[in-house]
Length: 123
Image (tube, rainbow, N blue to C red; front, side, top):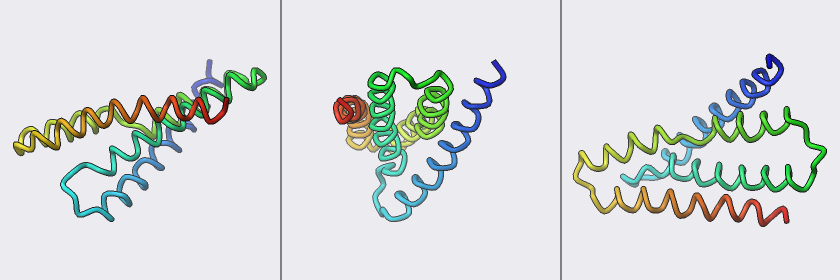
């Protein structure tokens, strides 16, 4: 159990730092009111988890530790549902209903498509 927690913690820390850096960079290059940084990170994270899932299926030799490191740790730390929720409520509060709908619908649809694409890339 301690070994599993270690792999999740290392992956989670790596994913969280990567999310912070990528999100800040993307948002910094955009003058848009749309929360592009979180949006992009979540879609890329969905693509990555699809790729990792496909690799785990393809290479049955992957141990539980690798799955915990990559999928639970890195992807779990990299993506952020709480930021999506907070930014969505911010758009509602600012009465930007169109951006709110685009953000929620785009996150869900593109997230699912990215996960599927990641899985298909490996197959």
